[in-house]
Amino acid sequence: MELKIISKEDDEIQLEIKGESHTLLNMLKSVLLDDERVEIATYDMKHVTISDPVILVKTDGTDPIIIVRDAASKLIAQCDEFLTVFNRSLK
Amino acid sequence: MEIDVLELSDRSAKFILSNTTAAFANGLRRAMLADVPTLAIDDVNVYNNTSVLYDEQLALRLGLIPLVTSFDDFVPQDECTCEDGCPACVISLTLSVEATADEGRMVYSGDIVSSDPKVQPAEMNIPIIELKVNQKVVLEGVAHMGYGRDHAKWQAGVACGYKNLPIITIDGCDRCGACVNVCPRNILCLGDKFVEVSDESRLNCSLCGLCQDACEIDAISVTENESSFIFTMESDGSYTVNELIINAVNTIKRKASSMGDILSTL
Amino acid sequence: MDYKCTRCKRTVEIDYQFTGIRCPYCGHRILVKERPTSIKTIKAE
Image (tube, rainbow over all chains, first blue to last red; front, top):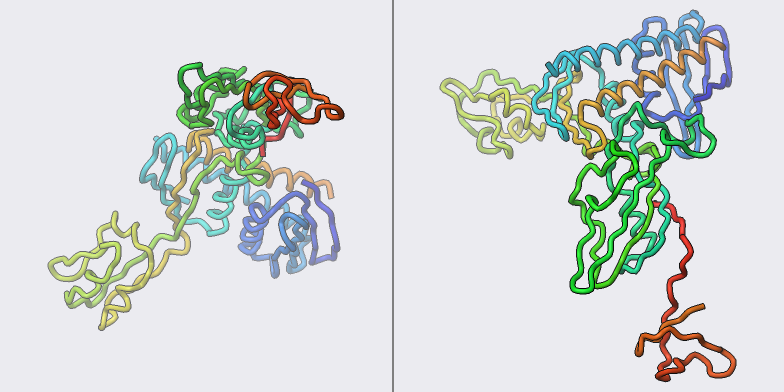
């Protein structure tokens, strides 16, 4: 996975994520939209085999890189919650 | 997040995942299909093939045979630290069968001999090719680990899907029975005072809405629960279903954490 | 290059310029090329 910043301002960032597809991006977008500090969160790609996705995040003023990092941590927490609940339900 | 397991075996599972988003359910489904790596035969060295299939057709059939995989013991060859192939990224399997001079025989996946005892075909009875009298096949298959998004032979999950949990509410029913007759899956039944739905049959509802259209007093309504999903999935044998789900979630975690690591350097 | 006659099933060596494509033992004109003994590596896709 490689990240490239296409454009960055104080409250907005466009980030190109190479080597990923809807699997990670859609989950990330959904976690970002749950965050109150986020005004716009969306991603776009032409087609998964020919282009890399670009994610756009516009915040209320907070540094957008911190927000995307928090979203990645929340996604990891959701996955951990799933694993705990899943292992418990197997018993 | 809650999970209610309805059916579970080595190869298939059905469970209800509640209090989560559709994005999470879809990400889990996509990871199970495309992002969990499995082993499959990738290169075939053909020493002799006098059967009726071309070498390439035979190689395709061999590639599609699912091999039992262990997630922690093997890595895809691009990610392996060795230069040229080592037991962690390359496994050799051989197939050497000859039909006798009297009668032909069918070659099954159970005839494949693996160099690593942990890596075996997941099913022993997959027919590969039928050999007629005196035909023989001698070849060596080299198995690599790969991702389902590159070729279907590396796809670990089979028939992974989910649907929203149906919510059927009945209010003010007059027992006319029109909805019971029109339901294509026989989910509704006439109770003493009004039409009833049992909890198990509610899961079979296809949300077609025929009962809503049949009811003249609008007493029944069918909607879907936006945060609960009924997951059905099967594994092709490379992993057990439990391992597959856990590996899929760990793959998503690994992607998110490598993204977080890169972001903290920016 | 080894060829096999489809009628008498014997391995033949043929010589294009003088006798043409013809089995020297039985005169049949349909020959089958033998599979070479080299190892063929192919991708399983």
